[in-house]
Image (cartoon, rainbow, N blue to C red; front, side, top):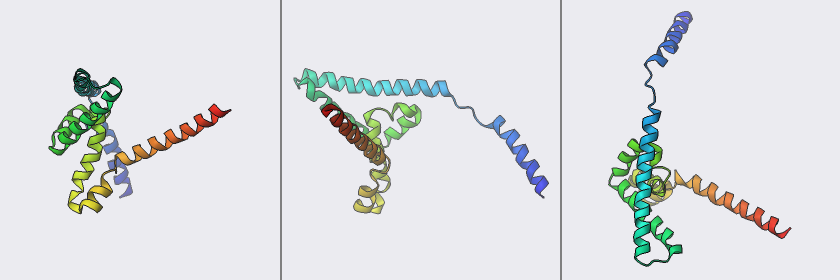
Length: 151
């Protein structure tokens, strides 16, 4: 029985690379580039719009971030962002809209468990570690900078 199992495993190992679909890396890179660029174009549109409205240049980035996070959350809420992400891959993850998607998706998924133990507890499952490590590393770098500037 063990000999038959070894032959079966060897046959599987020989056959699986032949039938395994090859990733279409070039197509995925192009679609990520195009969709990510379009998201950035939308952000640039709002940047120019807010500047034309007379909003000070140092405040425009905040306004654009708020609008882009809202758009990402809204598209996630109506189920469109996931379809775009399936087509574009990393092109939707890198912009700030991907951050809002990473918060809204778990919140929607765990809503049935209630607002406290579902939405509130699971909302930061994906984005939480990113926030923790980002804030922690910036505090550490800030402390090092403070110490180095005092020497």
